Image 1 (cartoon, rainbow, N blue to C red):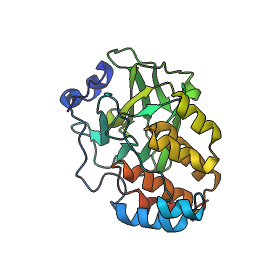
Image 2 (cartoon, rainbow, N blue to C red):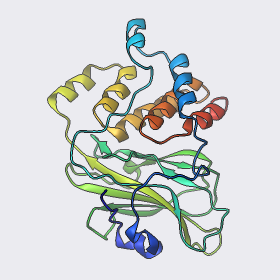
Image 3 (tube, rainbow, N blue to C red):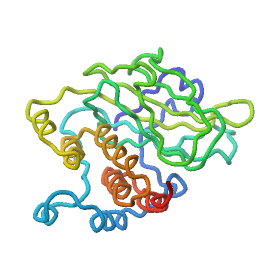
Length: 266
């Protein structure tokens, strides 16, 4: 497994992460409770995508299929904690797969999970792999409420080039003194779509788009499409469970119960 090469400015905040490896979290306290099978069953029963014949042949939620390419495995999940940080800092979790995380967009949206609302400083760093000079190193305006958080690169004037690997990090700081407390993040690579993929997306309905992106390994764009559907119907359960099932298909387990618990909230 490839080691995470964390930029120097992040290593300075979290020295222990210099040798960190992107392994799955075994701590059940990190993120929502694990209920993968339940979320998938509920999604199949409540979401209606495509015709009845299509529903009989495939699930009613997109399934993550990792891209067939040599991009590195790189994920920092669960909110690594700086030594001496207070226990009351909430868990944070980058919504990225263990496999290569791709986008077709020059300015994609990144997503991460916050377990509890915070008023303490939260910062975003985006860096080109191999560089210690960040493209973005800024505070995220708060206070932030618990839940899935979007980070839109359009808000920071950043455009990704096709080909290079980028890394992004969310750091939540201690309430007193502003010392770094927790960190999460992942990688992102922009690619150019094939002619076949471009044609498929151009002909797709809004319900089909996330399926096509997921089947072609385009992670960030699939999450964005599903999240836009959630935002469009914030009190409906089906879009949230569809997103939860997709996240769980990539190993980000435990979002089914959390999504269900928020379905009745405006």
